[in-house]
Image 1 (spheres, rainbow, N blue to C red):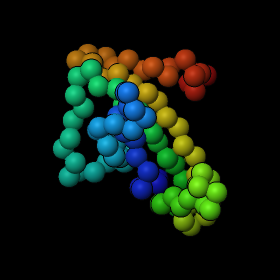
Image 2: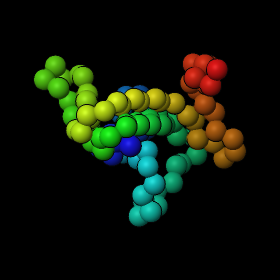
Image 3: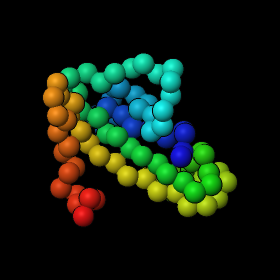
Image 4: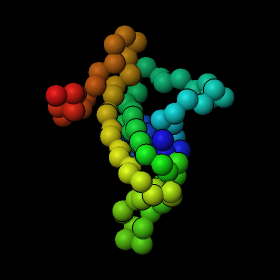
Length: 94
């Protein structure tokens, strides 16, 4: 897993609070989502690397130890019941 890229809140701006929603378990992070917040949950999976590095073009990212790296994102509305997955229709589950 890539540890230097995270999910985030989203709304009027692309990146809002909560900031740095880790895609791995951090037993010291006791932060909880707030009802009616919208968050981008981003998972970054890698075969050998643990950190992503940006190339000189300012966009392309590669793993620090090589191998393959992939990212997927879901945008979710946090409710007091079942979450609403806004990106459910992207057919990632099919």
